[in-house]
Image (cartoon, rainbow over all chains, first blue to last red; front, side, top):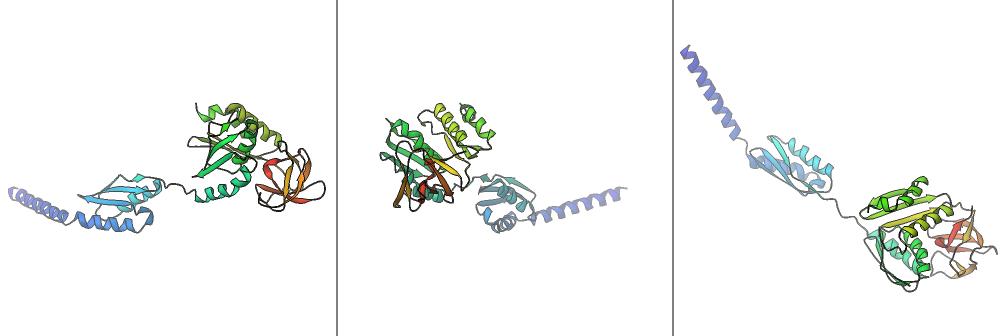
Length: 161
Length: 136
């Protein structure tokens, strides 16, 4: 019986020793490199950085939407020897591009302002800002014309006579 | 006060007429086509009552009255006669004039801001659409 116990203990020690040895074979730097390479295949994930410590991958950086954030997490989860993923990616939607809208509004402004000589309009990011002066009874007409240009906002700084 | 509360009367009328209502940032946007010019006028009347000098900068009201090509439109200038121009734009030569209140024929509204019309004398040209309203 004693001999059997001794043998079991030896087997256990050997097994543990071997498993420790096999654990040591996983190099975090290699896992990190593999994970980063996976992320680099997707242009939407270009802003994501992965660091691996004790097989736990931590994701940081910025993506444009929640979908990209989820894709990054599942892609890294699938990388060999990654035990778990801590997802600290920030979602920052891109700023809208108003270039075309501004150009369209600017093109139509001359016609809209034609009958309102003392009104000046500036356009930026889809917002029309009005300065100058106008007679009160002409104001609704002007506002109707400007609202029809489909701006993001109209800022009325007009002096109303 | 929340925008939807402030402009409730306007929003209710908009929804009755299938006008899109959307709130983005601090601006409420109402956009669409209503069946008659009277409803459009009513919406502007409510807007002006709630924000008398349009100084709140928190609403966009982009509604058009439904109008069919070939139908009649009324000239709704404030005082002056309406210029009928050769092409769509104030840089285009004037080919005719329509009196305030006159009813003329809409030929085409393929240009959103400048409608092609025919006046009572048979003269054809473009008028600024904001000065025309459909006649039911």
